[in-house]
Image (cartoon, rainbow, N blue to C red; front, top):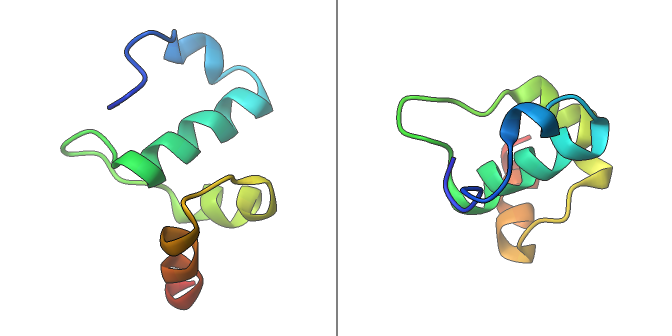
Length: 63
């Protein structure tokens, strides 16, 4: 995942705050090549995500 090179992603996946952090990074900076962002996770954590304002507005239109 881009921009998360200094974090242990396996440890972050264990906590809810870590999963939210990784999801924010995927949305704001793009996922790794060949991976997809899970829509169910985006909907689940939508109110807790801290996204780039224009990107959040665009995603609201799609969701």
